[in-house]
Length: 352
Ligand SMILES: Cc1ncc(COP(=O)(O)O)c(C=O)c1O
Image 1 (cartoon, protein in one colour):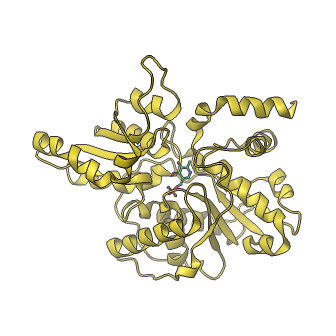
Image 2 (spheres, rainbow, N blue to C red; image 1 turned 90 degrees about the horizontal axis):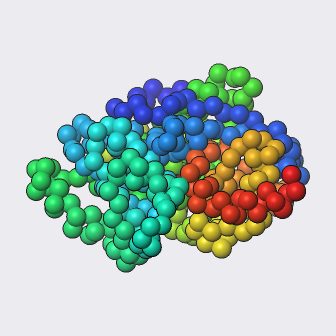
């Protein structure tokens, strides 16, 4: 165990989150060699804010509180889990939250749903932005920040997409410390996992895990593998690298890394970001029925489906992940309710 001390943060997440073996899914993934698929239940990090973002926000919102900031800006898609987690936690902490969400203005009278409903319920201010404004989000932030700077005498805290920056990168370093302790304690877990698998959106979770792997001495035993769910592998590798470098510098982490260690698997985006095929919905419905794990179709569902597909693709692909695979369930439960018709069709198709 490293003697690195995790920097100051808020305690917002319910941790440690459990790690459990998924026996039926492991069987499904064992076409070429026996594999144990474990899941770390980071979908249980909180009630309404649950998911991977809570771990990043423990560090990010610590910065806001310790600097006496009053307002937090962040951004994402209309159904962003990160935006929802930020809105809920800001409310818990007495901070004002402004969300810049990429999307069209809904027809008047349209009911709010899923993540956006929670954003508004906890009183976040929502600014809808065009794709062009979103692509220049720093400019959009600065244009709006002036009002708050004048009002409060302080700038809002500007948090990028997914909370993936040099501060948020620390969230999954702390998670890795937790994984190391859990694996070391036995309880039916292997001493080391051969791979840790995650859905990659803005790359901060992947970056933190890879930093944690090197910090806690797992570099010879464990691969960190991300599944791309929106961009392309190279764009994600660049993002992961950027967050890693920033986090190393900011917290003076006593480690380095090799660019070759950033593994991102392409080929599972399907029809596009937040769009999924009937096959994916059928897989998600099967996992829920068989192992009691509920997955979203945007992130965790796509990544776990990608993992099982890769394990079944060839003996070489299966060997890449090794025998004991830990899948991080990063949450995203509310987005189910934005895809209710597709879930319903999958249940109907199953005949169960
Ligand atoms: C449910 C869920 N899983 C995974 C991710 C990806 O995490 P990251 O943005 O750190 O790559 C996100 C956010 O983008 C998410 O909301």
